[in-house]
Length: 96
Image (tube, rainbow, N blue to C red; front, side, top):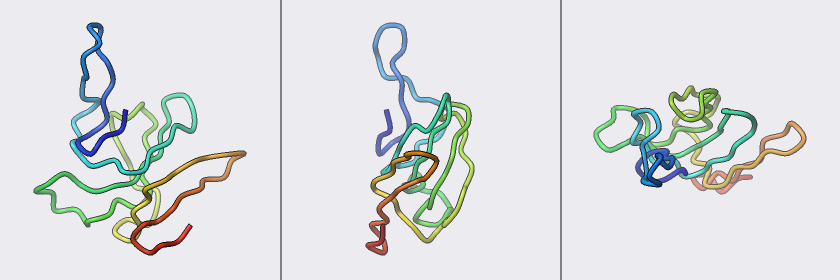
């Protein structure tokens, strides 16, 4: 589950468990394949990163993230993938 304070999964008791160590705000989030996620959002408070992540990608089920594009420029509140294309709504610039 993508939240304003990181990515979480349920542990064996059904309690939320942080995936990886990122406490970033994952505003936009979609699964595009096995262990492959796309997201957008904002760095955790106190970070020296730009205010917007742009498009970021994880290939290890959310344990780590790499910038794909538009770092510091876009804030995708909505992301989806279909037939090999990525769709998103950038709330910073009001652009699809």
